[in-house]
Length: 210
Image (tube, rainbow, N blue to C red; front, top):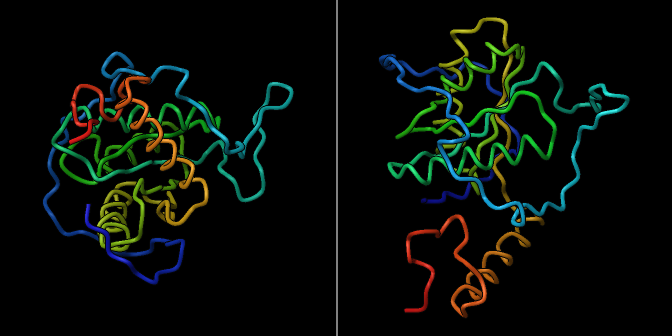
């Protein structure tokens, strides 16, 4: 993935960027859990705290946080490789379980379904009156400041009265240091014969010394 460094504010609120392109009929259907293989529970170690909680059996919304009527779409680039696309479903399941957010859907910017339009429509169908699109990208580039906002605005045209925004990409977040370091250590352990392939490399035979 090419990365274009831009000095752009960390949050983008969409207003009127529309895409004038033919609307194709979607063949996407919501994937079932049986469609992809889950990562073993031992790999699910999170250090971030959830921004929602449940008290006395009820939903608690923190100030400026994600509420019951918010839909969250986590969007990646999309791939022709099915296994790569299914990993986004796994991440979304992990994200939903960890945060407790009620409406979280995956989407691919291109090359695969569900599309941003698919996910946006599903969020609204499930009761969302605001949709938050979170790009699963490292740094701000053309996809973040142009393509994803345009596709989201196009999807929103079909749902008048539903507000939306596109959040910042992952960026230079301190927790990403731990993620990268964990990946490096795991791959070195696999090469040494002390660990299995991780979910990203499983079946590819790419994690080895050359």
